[in-house]
Amino acid sequence: MKKYSVFSLAREALRYHSGWERAWASPDPKAEYDTIIVGAGGHGLATAYYLAKEHGITNVAVLEKGWLGGGNTGRNTTIIRSNYLQPESAAIYEKARGLYEGLSQELNFNIMFSPRGVMMLCQTQHELRAMQRTAHANRLAGIETEMVSPERVKEIVPIIEIDGPRFPVLGGLWQPRGGTARHDAVAWGYARGASARGVDIIQQCAVTGIDRDASGVTGVQTTRGPIRCKKLCIVVAGSSGVLADMAGFRLPVESVALQALVSEPVKPCMDCVVMANTVHGYMSQSDKGEMVIGGGADGFNNYTQRGSFQHLEETVRALIETFPMISRLKMLRHWGGIVDMTGDRSPIIGQTPVPGIFINCGWGTGGFKAIPGSGWATAEMLAKGTPGTLAAPFSLDRFTEGRMIDESVAAAVAH
Ligand code: FAD
Ligand code: PYC
Image 1 (cartoon, helix red, strand yellow):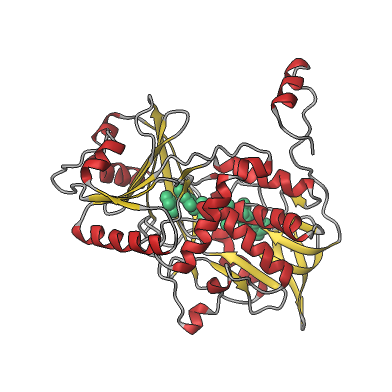
Image 2: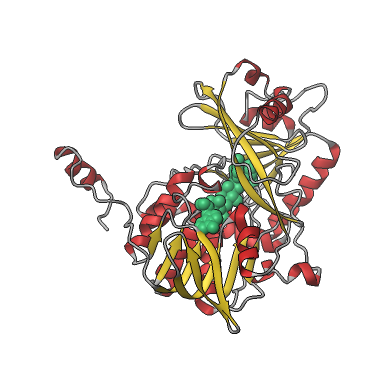
């Protein structure tokens, strides 16, 4: 892999950019791999990268039915934060946020991490008290967050209306080192790093069946033929239930569309992320100037990867009292992704009832922020055959043992 640097940029500028090589290889599938990862979203690619880098395991294929990063990873609104309530979640989300800080350097790929700060508004007394509790929990977990007054919210976010008649701003939970990153670049950077270390990334290769014998998994059926493997890791977000069905077990997840939209570009007016969870809306400004806006998940289970006018109207209406300026903006595009929701709004990372099959799913509306930490922990589990300390609390068993990790408030997005 050729290193990207100011020197390579200058060299290529002098020869009309004719010498750039492809960022990752596109090999044909081999007959057999030690490990197959299904799903080339951020979580699958990060898992492959850390398997190769941290554990030296490279006889690995990542199989993707479409194009890499084309699922939720390329459809999300890129918010990164770690202000979760429970210690288990704080640990994995903060590990991820920490890795994001150095990821451009580590991958030699600019993921445009922008720690611009995340403000979670409190617009009811109840929300104010819940967020105060979260701030205390964050302090205990060593996560830098603080409660701020309405006046401080206004200083940080001048375009906000704090004295709205229905939803006044009573305070905010501020995470100064939260922020955003370029979603595609995260997928592309991990793909390039994994491919350079010998991982085969195979796009346009849908898994259509899972082969098993009495001792466990033996391989997969794909649209490009059968491939044998010793270990299989399912990392397909909204399609997790479908893949589990192929393997012969059920998962406690529901698939729902989550939608977002962007406005026409405007001059810089908001340099942090704001989430208004009482009214079900959030907003940030992209580097291009578009206001990136999202709301709650669809209220019914579905596999629809697109936006709807009804949702667009609902989300903008929710935010207008708090951000009156958006009433004058034209909206440009809207879209949807399929998110996989668990009952406690925490992910599942662990072994499945089928020996040799592992799963990473259930990130619901909030898995972009977790990609580096989740990939790191899933790679550790695959390498050792059993989850390490970061992943262990998120096992599938917790639903039968009653060990819920309730993050329905921290998940923030209405569902
Ligand atoms: P995906 O990126 O969906 O990757 C799974 C891959 O599996 C897909 O590429 C798919 O094609 C592939 N696949 C499926 N079936 C098969 C098969 N049979 N064979 C082969 N491949 C298959 N999270 C945040 O932290 N912050 C946010 O601001 C945020 N905003 C969001 C906004 C929206 C509109 C949406 C939809 C989600 C948002 N999320 C956010 C959630 C986040 O996007 C997801 O949790 C995360 O991207 C999941 O990553 P993944 O790698 O698990 O899944
Ligand atoms: O998890 O922070 C989040 C989030 C914001 C928008 C969608 N998910």
